[in-house]
Image (cartoon, rainbow, N blue to C red):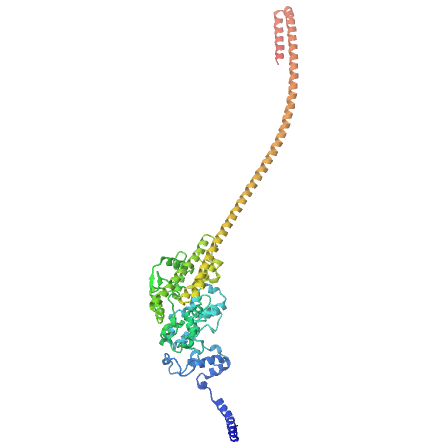
Amino acid sequence: MPTSKTLVLLALILVATASAIPAALTRAQAQPPEWSNWPDAACIECHLEKTPGIVEQYLSGAMGRPGIQNPDVAGELGGMERIPCTACHGSQHTSDEDWEEAKLPDYNTCKACHQEKVDEYLAGKHSLAWKAMMAIPMVQQMLKEEVLFGCGGCHKIGVKDPQDLLDLGLTRPYGVGATCDQCHTRHAFSTVEARKPEACSKCHMGFDHPQWEMWSTSKHGNIYFANKDKYPFNVSLKYVEPSDYPGPTCQLCHMPGGDHNVLTPWGFVALVAFQGRPEGLNVVDDPEWEAAKAEVLKALRVLDPQGNPTPLLDAVAQLRLVRLTPDEFMEARQRLLDVCAGCHSRDFAIQYLSAADRVIKETTIQLAEAVKAVKEAREQGIYPPRPGEPDNPYPFLLNFYEEPSGVEREVWLIFLEYRMRAFQGMFHVNPDYTHWYGWSEIRRALGDVVESVEEAKRMKQAEESIDQLGTSLEEVGVSINNLETRVAGAESKAAAAEERASALDGKVSSLESKTSSLESTLSQLHDTVAGLGDKVEALKSELQGASGKVSAALGLGGLAVVLAAAAIVLGLKRR
């Protein structure tokens, strides 16, 4: 047990300590913060109340902490130990009344200190991301919010036309106007954060470019997650060799040496704008590849249906969506190959890249088959003309999910989902993505497209047969109507004939009656004439007798008279 002296001593210590605590607290409270005498202290003090998270990020990062600046840019700071708020946001904004006067930084702001990195960024494809998005015709039809916060949520890493932002309804492009902060999150702007592969996962994931999912579940990703603490992310990539990392990361492969000129050999659409097919470190003649590539370029509207370049070809070249020459392709390939060779033998790396190149060829051929199936069906009248493009039978792959028919939307999925997963899965060394999510789905979808086209053909033939049957039935109906008309006419004529026959029967009966009457009259006349003949003969006899008497009585003169009279009588008899 403690003695009484010990207890007294402890009591004195507690009293002394208790009396010292308020004094220490008072001194601590009186101690001004480190930033209190900085030129932008008023900014920090105000924003500690308005946006404390931003201030915390800023004070934790290299720009807000004296003495830890990047040695690569220290000489460009003009002797400044830190970067004040006004260096990026200007000095026009001084209160919550004039907040709109604060300048919103862009890559030009960063360029003041990071000239080399900005120049690299402008040479690479990230700087073209916004323009590439705006060049797609379908984007002009999208909901503005979807453009800004959907597609634009990632594509805003590119250099933007201020008019685009105004057209999309922004007067102050918060969250959209900047570029560098897409990887170097404001306001800490941490290079350590930007060197970690997670920095890429926000954009390089999902439907059409799931590189994060591919890499993170590949063997390379397994190595990373199992050995995170062994990656020297605090060291600039400028001073890192591939073998310094246990396994490759996004930045190690695509930004070797910290080069911000991010550019891949095959580009986003895995096509090239020159003759020949890249395979490994060679460009080989391949007519089958050229034919398939031409069909896909027509479906992208880079070529017209006759194979002639369209204005979109210039846009594709300017946006660096494809490599224009073999030298440009091989320069990008050699850069990647050098990273691979940091762990693998160069021959092994070339063989693997060659295999990936052949996957691109085969998936392009499959896509071209689907494109041709729809094109030929439209040429045969199986599908109606495209709205707004009646003379172009090809599907339009950049119309995305707005394609006018289900079969064309399936072709779009082959292009933007399945084919992407097949060849990207190869380059990111992910077995399931390259096969089950890629090649397998391409084959299934191509079969569905061909089957849909054949079914549409059968339906078209059935419709034509029905139309022909309908025409035949109409013709039969017309023939029946004509026959009925003719029968009705014949019946009318028959009735008229019957009427005429009946009339003729009446006339015949009348004639027969008249004939019978005439015959009776003639018989009577015959009898009368016969009677007259008898009378004439009697008269002759009488005349002869009388003649003899007259002759005797009158002599010869009288005889002449008698003969004349007899002649008259004979004449009457003949009548």
